[in-house]
Image (tube, rainbow, N blue to C red; front, side):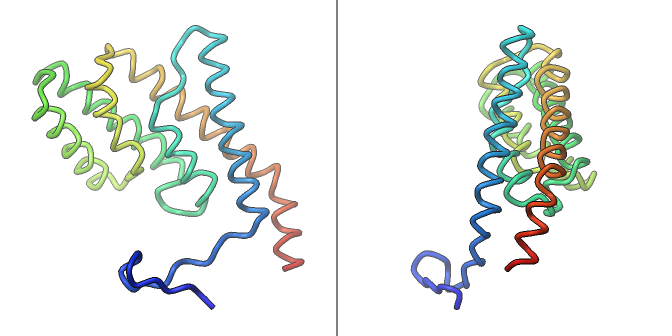
Length: 170
């Protein structure tokens, strides 16, 4: 029976806990993905990793069937939000209100294009804090998001038979 905690969840029923196998694969998959991207950064001398990729892993590995975790949302959402963040930083200026407008505009753009990926909404904030140049669109945003997508798909395919067997046995 689902747990109910009116003080902490607004009276709503908590979602069911995922299987231990799903939890293990999600944790392992996200660790391997971030480790791989971090290693690419170190080996190549280019930044392949972005702070928001940790939150992307939560969606890709924890909730792979969610709309927000789909490839279009992941890649376009990150790219669009970084582009908007850079645009505001370079053309409007590095002020607090410009950062706020960049985040709001990025959200609106993701909603209009139907490419919402919540972790990407933090990209303008990251951009305002680090003040990168336009190459940030390629490294780490686009390259990192594409690698993250392929790693998530690879791990998902490798674990499919194990997950299917667990579903049959449960």
